[in-house]
Length: 313
Image (cartoon, rainbow, N blue to C red; front, top):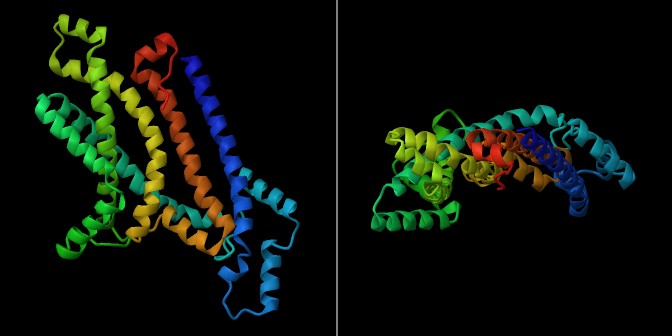
């Protein structure tokens, strides 16, 4: 167990170092994109106004000094002041971050539950129905992400008018984005769970449990589902990162107020401090979630504690 904690801490530290490297690359990429003055100030801004703005954001300072200030803001979590909004980034991010957290926080457990249901349904089906079921899941999995989004908006938002097609006002605005994200996660985890269930069914402890006369419900929950969840949790720890990436598309198509939609807007204005916050904060949340799942995995599957091995995603 102690070895598992050490490895989890090592992975967390490595992720933080990688995040700092990405932040540094973001700085140089923003420099290559050009002067933010032309994307933020009005077209008819005078040369004096442009010079004053460059001085205010430190664009006239040496590049090495700008990099030092930028990395100091990154490490301390201050991120500086937004070029466009002229407000501290730490004050701008929270409402947008809360919008994204609501999407991911609702879609992830629904996706897990849906994946478990799909996995056990396919496990108990006949071989013919199982092949059809798996084929349907694979077809749905291979669809480009924007296709079901556009179809859902057209059917439920435009034609039937059951749900608002865009915006982030109230609970109804969450239903379509959350269900679409959860459906995608359910399909992925269902396919993975089905394969793992078949593998666990061949283990000796399953044969022993059946020989002892363990009830079917206890066999499925304690002996079959619990060790299988260790792989699903490891898989979903990566899926949190993919979910955060998927919200960029979902938020922009649905005009939903979240970090993804803010990042796209910020990229167009070359607002480096705000763009840094939009990337760094969700990535840090992902690393913390990954750290927690690394700690939970040995508890879910006792075999990982016995031989010291870990499920690598």
